[in-house]
Length: 442
Image 1 (tube, rainbow, N blue to C red):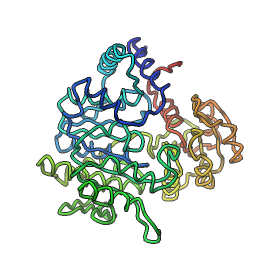
Image 2: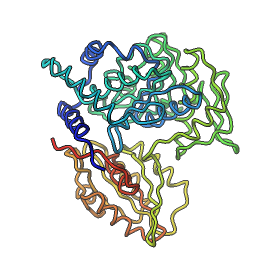
Image 3: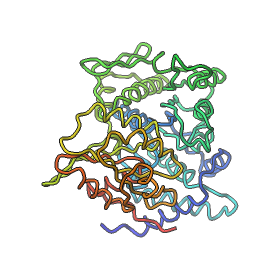
Image 4: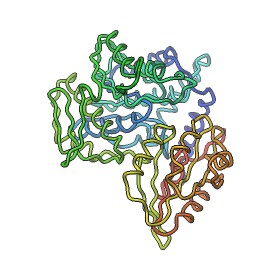
C-alpha cells in the first residue's frame, strides 16, 4: 500500500525535531500548551511512570476503563510500527489523517515562532493532548516518556491518580546513578493531594533508603496518599486465578492477557490506580469489568508468541526487554515454560547506551546459539561487538539474522527476539506482514 505523501512529510518534519535530542524541563512544554489553549487542562488523567512495566500498566488501566464503558485515551512510547500507535482513542490508533492535520497545524504555529524550539517528544505529547481534548474523553492514561519530574507529560497539573511501576537502573546518565536517584525522578509526577500507587521495592534485607522510602517521603511532603504493592495493595496467585486486594476492593479469579509472572504486579497496580481514579470521579468499580479488562488487554511485542508455518516452522517469542531488569523478567519466563523439542535460539540486538553486556550475561545460558544483529540507527551497538562478547554469530541485517536464527532452531525450535524494541518491531512486521512507517532519511 502506498503511503500518502502528506503522511511521509509529517513524519519527516516530526523526526527532524529529534535532532534536538531529549530536552528535559517543563517551561517550554507549558508555553506550547498555553499557545494551544491548554488542552491538557481539559483531560481527566491517570499518570504512569516507572522503569519497566509502565507501558503494560498503562495498557491495563485503559483496557479496564473501556470495559467500564468509559471513552478512553492512551498515550505511550515508543511505538512498534507506526507513529500513530502512540495515540489511541477507545483502543484504536489515531488515524493518519488526523495525525497529519494536527502535525501540520503545529508546524504552522511553530514556524511563526522561530525563537521557540520544540523536541520530538514535546511535539508528540502536545498533539496527543489536543487529540484527547477534542475527542471529549472520560479518562486519559498518560505514560511518562523518560523519568517523570522533567518529562513533557508532567505539565498535567492535577491528575486523578498517579502510578509508579517497578523501578530499576536505566537511563542512569540522565536520571542518576542509583535506584534512589531514579526513584526521586519518578516521584516527581506526584502532585499535591493526588494519591499515588507504586510498585517500588523495599526488600527486607536492604539497608538504607529504598525506592519505596523515596516515594513515600515525596508523597508525604505533597500531602498525597501513598499506597504500595505488598503493603496496602496485595496480589496473590490462587488456583482460580489472581486475587487483588486494595482497601475495600477485592477482585478474584483474574486471568491475564499478558504473559509473565511480573505482569501480576502490574495488574494489581493498574487495578488500584483505576480504583483511585474512579473514586475521584465518583464512579463505581465493577470487579467483572476489571477481570475482563485484564484478560483482554493487548500489548504487542511483550512476551508475544507467533508461530511460523511450513515444514520449517518455529515458534517466535518477541519481547522488547531493553535493560537488565527486563532481561531478568524474560529469563524468569523462559524458566517457567517448556523448552522446545528443537533448539532455542536467541536473536539479540541492543542500543549502545544500554547495559547489553549484563543482559547477555543474564540470558545466554538459556540458548543453544546466539545470533546478534543491529537496528539501522546510529545508537545501535554493532552486531559484531555483541557477537564477540557472547561468542555468537553476527548479521547486521535484521531479517537475514532472523532467517539464520530460524535455521539454527530447526523444525519445532524456538527463536527468542529481544534486546531492542526496534529489532522486535522489524521481526514482528516481517512475520505478520504489517505495513511500517516509511524510513525517513535525516
